[in-house]
Image (cartoon, rainbow, N blue to C red; front, side):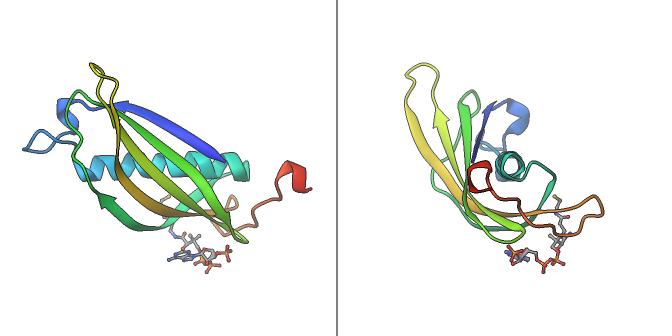
Length: 124
Ligand SMILES: CC(C)(COP(=O)(O)OP(=O)(O)OC[C@H]1O[C@@H](n2cnc3c(N)ncnc32)[C@H](O)[C@@H]1OP(=O)(O)O)[C@@H](O)C(=O)NCCC(=O)NCCS
């Protein structure tokens, strides 16, 4: 299951070097992970862990950012989501992978307690 978030980088998203602030980007990665997991679970999820987030290339004000989240493993109540972040320059349409990481999301019930991930439609 997959979710993609597109964002353009505004000056208010940047640090003093004019590049995207890491905390803002991690928020976008967290949102995309949650959307991918919610699509799989058909219900609410919470973030329990973020691991191995590597910022390899800076992303600049004015660039377009694609945050691509894919559920790569499903446990009992948890889902592991791989997130790739691409930057795209609008003038050249050149695209580069800039950031990667893994997020673990947990399916929860209305009281916030872990609940089993349902089988996929074609597994039922
Ligand atoms: C996520 C939460 C509901 C898990 O509750 P818990 O009582 O620890 O639940 P469990 O120990 O049964 O773990 C549930 C699942 O999470 C996984 N898990 C728990 N801690 C983890 C961690 N640090 N890293 C990876 N997976 C983890 C467990 O392996 C288990 O997976 P499984 O069901 O697929 O086997 C609870 O820790 C919580 O509410 N945390 C706060 C979440 C939050 O506020 N996030 C920010 C806002 S979205």
